[in-house]
Image 1 (cartoon, rainbow, N blue to C red):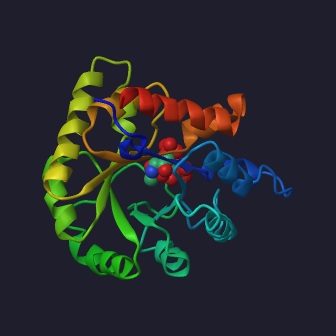
Image 2 (image 1 turned 180 degrees about the horizontal axis):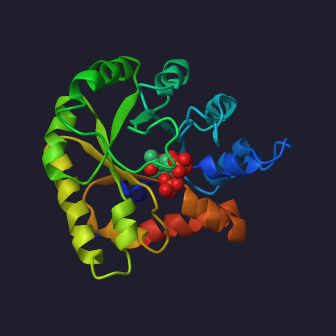
Amino acid sequence: MTTSASSRTALSVNVNKVALVRNTRHLGIPSVTRAAQLCLEAGAQGITVHPRPDERHIRASDVAELHELLKQWPEAEYNIEGNPFHNLMDFVRAYRPQQATFVPDGQDQFTSDHGWSFPQDAERLAPLIAECRALGVRVSLFMDPVPEQMAAAKAVGADRVELYTEPYAAAWGTPAQAQQLEAYRAAAQAALDAGLGVNAGHDLSLDNLGAFAAGVPGLLEVSIGHALIGGALERGYAGAVQAYLQCIASAQP
Ligand SMILES: CC(=O)[C@@H](O)[C@H](O)COP(=O)(O)O
Ligand SMILES: NCC(=O)COP(=O)(O)O
């Protein structure tokens, strides 16, 4: 059965690492907004940023400038990630992106490496999720692939979960590869059964994305940055985005 392009998993390009390189000089290049523009022109369905409190890569000014750029791309989605108990809610209130992804990162964490825990996090998350939804912003919760946690994510008001895929990526090419894929398939199915949408991200690449996109049910969106931007250094943004779109299309014929 041929999958229509509209039902295929959407690609949201995370441009954190463009900002990381830009921040190493005071020259304003490479441009984050130019990178986003080129990725959207190449067919990416969205742009993701993770404006961490220390502004190691994405700065508040980038979030504002991308908000302005995306007004020219009404079909594209803006996904702003962050910890809602740090600075994320300021950006949600100011820009009302299509999606806010809540990530339980510490202020100086090296990178994202875990999801929310229920029931511990439910009480403090619920009002912020409700505020986002009242602003018309979809909420996705960054989650480990634990089927038993999905009902609680729904109960706290989330629209979607984003499955944290580093363990899957780390297992790629090892004997644990198939077991990891099955874990994500089961977690995604549990999310669907709970009435949640399913996103995924972290360390996805052209090596491991195809099997994931083919094997994980109901995958609405993948947000990919590190490997895609790394690939863009070799083949350009358009070439990198088109390679990821082709990978998804081949996995979801
Ligand atoms: C939440 C997640 O897995 C990534 O979106 C995150 O943005 C990675 O952050 P760094 O780019 O700072 O590693
Ligand atoms: N939510 C995952 C994301 O936006 C990008 O993660 P990565 O591809 O940079 O690891």
